[in-house]
Every structure is written in C-alpha cells, then in structure tokens.
Image (tube, rainbow, N blue to C red):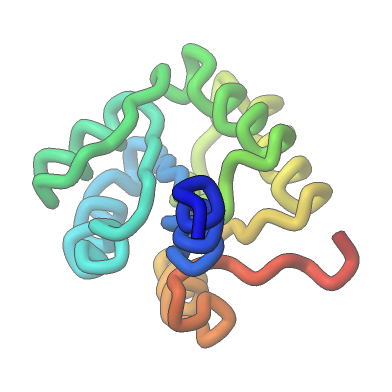
Length: 150
C-alpha cells in the first residue's frame, strides 16, 4: 500500500471533530460557563470557536483551547454567521437573552436564519444544547451525520 493510499484510508476512518461555535449574551454568560464545564469531555474532542468574552469565560473555566472571534456586537455574531454559510460549523450553542434588546439584533436574526437555512444544529438554551450533544445522531464517531437532503 502506498503512503498516499494509507493516509487516505486513515483520514476516512478517523472521525472529524465536531466544529462548535459558542455565543452567549451577558445575562447568559454564567449558564454558558456551567454548560461548558458540564460538557467539557465532549468539548475537549471538538474544535471550538466563540465570540470574545464568551470564549474567554469558556477557556478559563474548562482549560480548553478556544478560537476567539470578535465580541458579538463588534462583528463576532456576523463571523459565526459567515462560518455557517461556508459550512464550517456543525453546531452552534447560542444562549441569547430573550428579554433584552440587542444593538446588533439584525446580526442575531441573521445568524439564526442562516443556521436554519444551512441545516446547522443550533441550540438557544441549555435544555436544547444538552439534547443535541447527547443525541444518538452524533454517533459513536462524534461527528454530525450528513443531512439526507444535502
């Protein structure tokens, strides 16, 4: 077997890590911190990115590497929306404040709309996030199955 063929087989057999984006509005930062600590095992096997302050909180609480994006109001939500559109994410965990008004509400709506449009799993509260990360749909490989309509 040639080295190139062996590398191709290894790549096919090794699962790709989940690509997860984390976002939380200020009143939800503590809930995100607690969720990340509770799910540290799963997150340790994932590639994580997060908006600015959320990412710092998660990294400090879990000790995990987190790719820090801009703060949400400064373009971080838009960065994650672009990642969704480019199919660079498998899961978005977005603990937003349903009672507060956001100066970047258009970016928030765009992010949620793009997640739905591009069939990217999105959790907007802890219960949904827990259901998604414990779903058998994640499979033994830890990957997200391809959509049958994609």
